[in-house]
Image 1: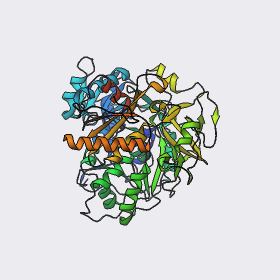
Image 2 (image 1 turned 180 degrees about the vertical axis):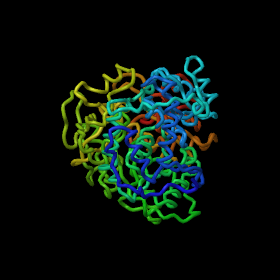
Image 3 (image 1 turned 90 degrees about the horizontal axis):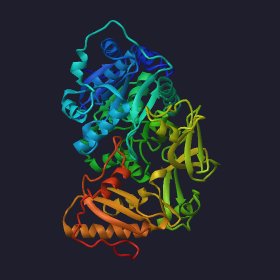
Image 4 (image 1 turned 90 degrees about the vertical axis):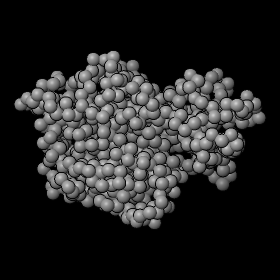
Length: 583
């Protein structure tokens, strides 16, 4: 196919009202829509109609049925190519459980990647692992101690062919999706046919209100729930055409994402905040863009930071990006993908609270003109809970909180996973017997919309105050934006007030004089904006450990620091602490 699939289906739209993924593809295959794969310059490489996807998936399923017993797990390298979509759906028709796996480029060094892969293989009990031939050496190396065959896509397509398919039914599994491991080892989250159908129905009918003129555009990785569910399975279940660009191509040429939206009149696209930030940084005014078709610019996958989004809105507003197009949302892989969506057209509903009051009382009270600038913190509302689902904000004694009281976000509904694959302890810790999921996130209600404030595990308790590490990190990055990269803050040692608050900050220079300037500027900013004694260490670029979904893994960075594996760029200089204390 030399042209991308059309936006128009040629059949009536159905909002994921199917019992299984196979049922959904059977219907989508009667439409004219499908997936389109573009290179880093937004040039079409390959189009895959849903008709062709079904034909190829069913043919491959006939090879997979004799290869493995029903419900066997297949590790599947989640490359942004037609082969991944075909193999994922072939598993559905063969009754095998695909487990999309991250790619080597996403997790730092080769050793780190191999360790992650080994953990996933251990917990997933894989029957085999399928990957492109280019990835076979590193995957075989990672699994050399385990009796798990690593097969290239070409080898899979040459397996002996049988006569039968064995499609999953409505009560069966669908996939295993690995958590990104931001605070722990990766856990295999079980997706069932019913939980996937329920969430895709909620997303396409209520969250995004998908219509006949919609078209998706995505650079998101397919091993993460926002890419896999949001831009592969939900579109398939609603017969939506999607234009894909590889995540690596996006990081090299982020404007190609916007070019795709311009070229093909994309209406729906999602990104974590940093994706929008990258577009602002890399914009060179070297082309004309029309982004007026983009009606829902979703934000998910990390904390919603209003400042970079406002910059994006101002810059690309001159190119047709609508003021109300931003669509914050909240969800996590344990709820398949989505739990809340901002109403269409609302944009960024900001709420600025008095952090001094919050840190004392755990209440999100609106800032007034008397609130000092350094005590203000602006959050963005993440919208309304999907129909058929419930959210409660609870304190640590499980009492339900109301109004502006900050507590644990707990969730219940048909989209919630039954738990973690072969991990009873983790399942019992997060999922209650009566169906409630403790998300590990903190938040509060702004009228009937959810506001998410951070991860409970990351919270730093210091002198009776609740300190968000993000506040320290953002203050540091804002103090020296052109010379610094990622920041990571965490507490160490002692209990209560004996804790030491550590801050690591990546620098793009090794010049001692510049490092000294950065050090002083950052320390002054933290003293003013956060008011917490912090031990600052300037570190080389690439020090931080990033999860497969692009989030900072504070737990793993802390572990790396405690092992003495992080270089101090100012090793010859005395380290001083904010607050008048010298180290």
